[in-house]
Length: 290
Length: 326
Image 1 (tube, each protein chain N blue to C red):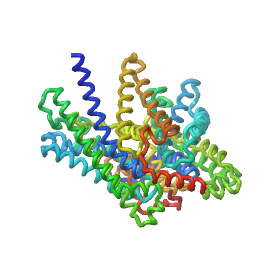
Image 2 (cartoon, rainbow over the protein chains, first blue to last red):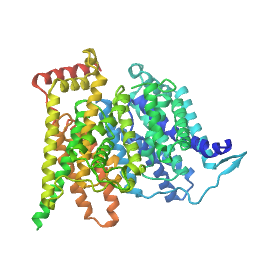
Image 3 (cartoon, chains in turn blue, orange):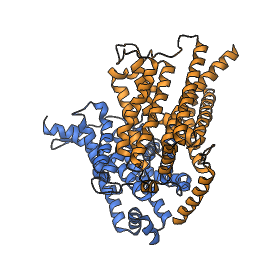
Image 4 (cartoon, helix red, strand yellow):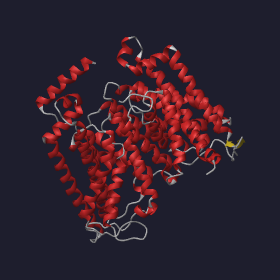
């Protein structure tokens, strides 16, 4: 197979898909690292974000790119609200109870999307977009924007976590919650901030999946497994690890069709998950093991 | 005539409650007694249903079959197959906190759904496996239903008895010990990984048996019958509402939730068709909400886990110490 064909039909789609997974995985890794539980409603929160953007597009007739920030803010408040109404009361109980609660939230969010928008497949814009040709690499504009946006969002988050007071507080909570509390870090504010960031990241991943493919009520749920595989592959609690993990999972999924039947593309994430848990549970970049 | 119809419906409901009871009892072994989070119940259910169907169904041009073994062999095959699927997953994931098991079991259920849909030679693809033999299937409709109900009840009681026996044995006490205080159990030299693996496989096998009973009752099994999320979630809410760690609670929860679930379907069917889709998903929303309410206001369920007098005081002081330590 010619090299360019491999790049155009397998590698580039893999990087685009991987960027979408990376956005979700960064959010999962924050919840996993700071709040210390597996947030199973993550995918369905992404679905809600994608459909919220669709709602803005259909009501105001604006471009989807204008709708994205609105959806991000909406999802940030949704995430904070879900935490306040449902997860907060369970904080004294074993963490696994919160995991169970988040499974219920996943179901509720999806049901909400299905009640409001129905079960049909939707798109942001109609018509077929032809890929442009850049020195032999065929790529659509929206795919370029997806990759750029992923690196931009994660870059901003990275600087925030490294340089600002609140970012440092979040990392302190992630490294050693008892020590962070003793040092005067406000647990409640950090939790709220984490959820806001998670909501923004969820909306972004859902939106970019929606703009590159289509919007379906199950879109987020099917992303959940690859996103978790990416998180654990990169190392729980490691933002840069989640990006690396997301890209690897995306590329492996897209290139796997060269070797196995296309139906089993979705099984690759599961294979990666089991493999990494078996050989190196801390992930590539030495994350936590809960 | 009306009375016969009502009786038929009641028997039909009772059989379903029996099948779900097996799933809830299986989950109770995993979650209630051992603290293992299985979010892929539908997967083990499907493996059981398909295994038993393949082993017992007559030959067909579309899927693997033609073994025509007795139904009992099919049930045993269902339990073995579900246990075999559980083994590697448990082996990899039980070393970690249950969060990892939750993710992995979601994955298993998805993979099993993919296999069922795409491997037509094995499972008949979208058409599924038909002509699955049904015990007492030759009798007239009502008698056949009643006979099957009796069979289901007998199996549920057998499983219930087996679990109760196992749980009141030293094994059960050890499992609860591991669940409540892993460090202490390790310090006493218990092999936590191996014990958890046993509980996980035991529970999965019973879920497989539940799947087999479902396939034989319907005389067929198709991919539509295994909606991973709804099926899994219903079992969870049944167990949590009824009382995890209490087998009678699990059975009660199954009956309560299944009656609410069916009654709400009956109500939404009365609505005009333009609201049909909305109403269908509102039911799902309400079930999700019900879980949140139970977790918040009555986490121990309707029938809490029974505790001996001496052990209760011990647990209380232990909990006090633990919260003080926090």
